[in-house]
Image 1 (cartoon, rainbow, N blue to C red):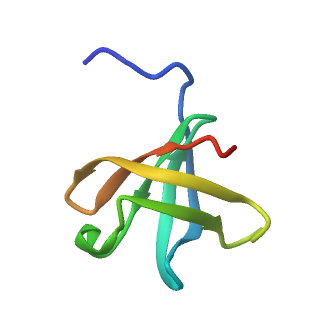
Image 2 (image 1 turned 90 degrees about the vertical axis):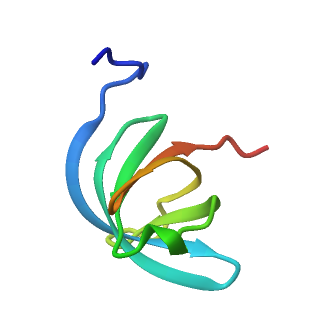
Length: 83
């Protein structure tokens, strides 16, 4: 399979939270790059299309995200630039 990403993803295993509309759901970031990430969740049906990804170890690290793909319990994200 050809790699379509501009930046390679770094493999990580970091706890994080999906935050949207006042609700919060735990997840694990499994890989990350400057443009996006992949996360593992218990049930991807509850992941909103757009949300904030907040890193558990440093709550000042927040990414605005949108879902690009879902495969079983893994969700691929693109980081959205904020104006």
